[in-house]
Image (cartoon, rainbow, N blue to C red):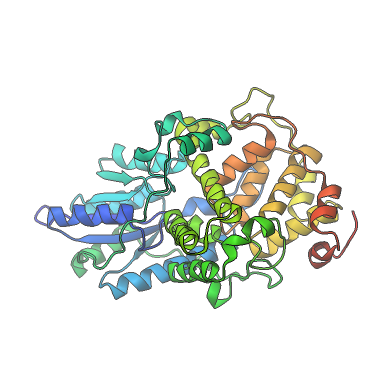
Length: 447
């Protein structure tokens, strides 16, 4: 193995795209500087099949199906460039360590993800002797553009946003699109690498689930495919139709595709980069004018960024039962949680949301806040159980935003105001006045 030309393993994580390829471009440069090859890989983490403490599998069928589409599109595009995507199933650190060893102590390059489990994978690789380089790329703002060190981010979102505004910090422009990739390792080496990690386990879920067509994001349609090319087409049509100017007025909608941008499923897998999304809106504003509505889209992306920087600052503390606060650990009522999870609380507004979530893997932001509030404040259950159910269900699951939003609503995050209860009766009257949403999903109008 020692006589092999040195190469780079590029580990795709939550960046399943070729546009705005910050980390991938770094890997290409490293491969070229070493005079070697580049091997794109993806590891299906078998920890997703583990049972949570709350009694269900960590990653559900809709997430697997959505991920499968993103990988399918990515592999197709890589093959068009003369490369490929090699996939394996197992523990990422072990799989990548085996690959790197078989391929002559290859360098592993990947994006940086500042969440405990993902950081633990990098630490395990390095402790085992594998060379790893990580590149930060998932935020709208580049770390060096911030008016503070990422680990010193203001805890309150309003302060964070104001500091960016006063410092005139602008979103980072997307990196240039790729036009070519270095060659793959020789075929014999690829076969040796595959043999080192084994084949696909026969009992793995197939990831062929399909959403209920009544859902707001019917992602089994060709236009809503999980891959990068559909993501970019969706972004383009959203802008072309002038929808950024109506976003603020419609964003609390419940049914239909156009009430919100629907970028989040592609942002979650990285099939769409936040920087590319904002560049499209920036171009729209240059042509069509700026409005409170179009700027609200930037506001939403800044929330996404804030949750990322908070992970760099607070790390594993965000995952404890008490969160960042000093209040006692939350109570939990297993029976109430099960009724909530199954959409059988008897509160039609809440049950409708939970049934849509379970049937589609998607839920509007308005309903997410309502069902989370109900679990925490009305049913007096552990917020972590709700966060785990969202992780199981949501095709747009994002570790930063999921953790941050559940902490925020429970009053255990950086903004520790205790009462964030949403009154389900008032909310239903305001956002579903004719009961159409409740009839669709819970078969009821009242409550």
